[in-house]
Amino acid sequence: MTAPGRVGWALLVVAIAVRVNNALRYPMGYGFDESENWRYVSTLVDAWHLPAPDAGWSTAHPPLFYWMAAGLGRALGDPDPAFTFLVVRLVGSAAGLLVAGLAARLVLRVDPGNRRRALLAGALVLFLPAQIFTSAMLNEEVLASAFVSLAVVGAATGRRTALVGLAGGLAWLTKLSGLLVVAAAAAARLLDGARRGHPARGARQAAVVGLVALLVGGWFYARNRIVYGYFYAQDLPQHARMHTMPPGSRGVGDYLRVPLATWTDPQMLNPDLLRSVWGSTYASLWFDAHRHFLPRESDAVSRAGSVILLLALLPTAAFAVGLARGARRALRGPGPDTPLVLLVLVTLAGYALFTWRNPWFAAVKGSYLLGLSVPFAFYASEALAGWTRRGASAIAVGLALGALVISVAAAFSFGGPFWSFEHLEYPGMRWTAPGTP
Image (cartoon, rainbow, N blue to C red):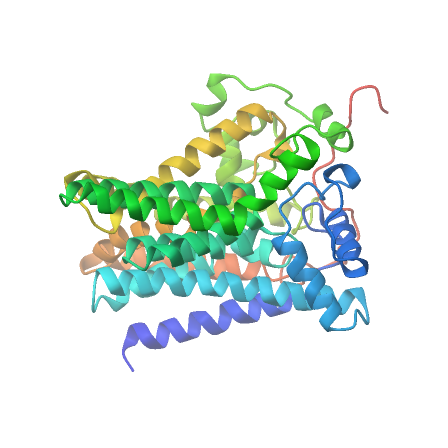
């Protein structure tokens, strides 16, 4: 076995161990909206039909994840909610591992024989903190990212358009943002068809992607429109509490600066970080800035966050370099870069619009960008593979990446070195609504 192969298997074992540990030990009800998500799942366990969007906090969400969780609960005979939680978490962890495998496979498909780059791509997903801690939570983020990854890898490797549409439709039926990969894949087929001198074929393929996705995932939104008068529920009465969260408004400046607090005090309610969309996103992608997983009141955790966020600048910079290269290739002609770059662009634009229309700290989450896991790993690994080829700089980059992996594995293993006490405090950052003590 080659050296990259041995390192890859070792990293995979560690990544699986971290996720299994978290699945077993992470408390029920601590994840993002987890209690409300469980109420939705319990409703479906008792009765399979979908509740009204305003029946609960989470019931407006697309149903695929909740059907999956409820189906597992029914198959298990629902003996104990804790056991159902465990199984759902393990399924979510497996979905995250699938994303890592897809990233590595795409690299080997596009860059055959470059096992070091494939190793880097897989490791970037396996040890992305938002992937790890979200896998321990009862929510749809990791499952949605898996379907998005299947769709974009299929689009990048020329898989059958119907299969790309199927994966995109499943992503859309799991999370509204899944529509973005459908748009990116369809647009890529349309553009590539025109560039190859077959515009009619490209248009047909784009139509197939869109039609299949519409049949698989769009029916839920059509049903909402027919039954309730809107495609997707927004600003329901039960969500009014969010409207009291800070900052309460967004300005253009919130998208133009990343404060030093991103590294020195990585928690969402820091006044500077609160006004920075991209700083908050970075801190919640590479760390737990919302403190739903790590202890809220811990200097050691804050210091670990500073270290991880500083080290994470390396793969983030590599992603920017690789993405720029991929964008140039996409502009030159058809190829695998077109759907990947389009997915990055439409996802970041959609996320910026979402955070503008929902100007509250709870709406800024790095986990909302997990659908970009494959493009991130693909482009970051391209630059990192060059930076680790030879010389003193290669040793420095390798040591920094190794330190990042060790730091992430240690920090995001529930009950690990940063858990010298029981996690009894309620998760999440403390904030007070106006007019309350």
